[in-house]
Length: 112
Length: 113
Image 1 (cartoon, one colour):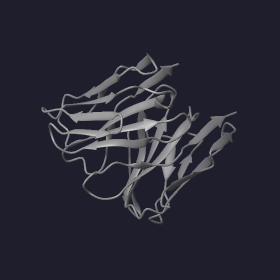
Image 2 (cartoon, chains in turn brown, red):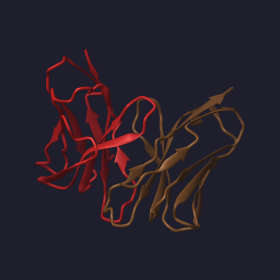
Image 3 (tube, rainbow over the protein chains, first blue to last red):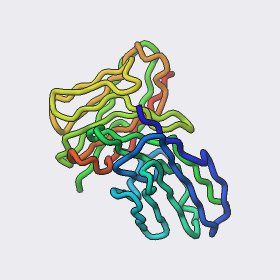
């Protein structure tokens, strides 16, 4: 089946720094989603992208649907302590009905 | 407010026992999913159901069973055949055919003692 390669696997940054993470695939996706998971909780949807080239913001978060439809990026500006958690990308491939493919996650730690 | 409720939050199981994890949603979603998450790992699909009385195996279905007798409920049984059941289990649901994002429950942490 499809696979998503998410990087980096983990990040340690200082409070106030900007963060970038990405997901790539060898096959195309029709939808890209970014989730955040707090410790001991379920993932929560941050941003959804539905068109190639689409750039969408949600507060300090910005995500882009790659023009090739095989990648997506998430940027977090001016990080704060509550940004700590695991960030997952997810994609919906053509013909996959409603079944998402998830990346392996990026563990973000924000140092004071 | 609508959402997905997983219970219990923490569950302890003795080796050789079956346990059932509950997942209930009041979002009127057709599709429901069970995922397993191990420390530092991504989400692995166990089972999913797109309609009542129908379900399909995911990538790691061995040692697990499900039922979907009601639209609102999708319980997961971890059987004694699952050799390494200690993990965080997440239930999710999805609204329609277009593939909008899943809504997740808050998870159940299962520990074998």
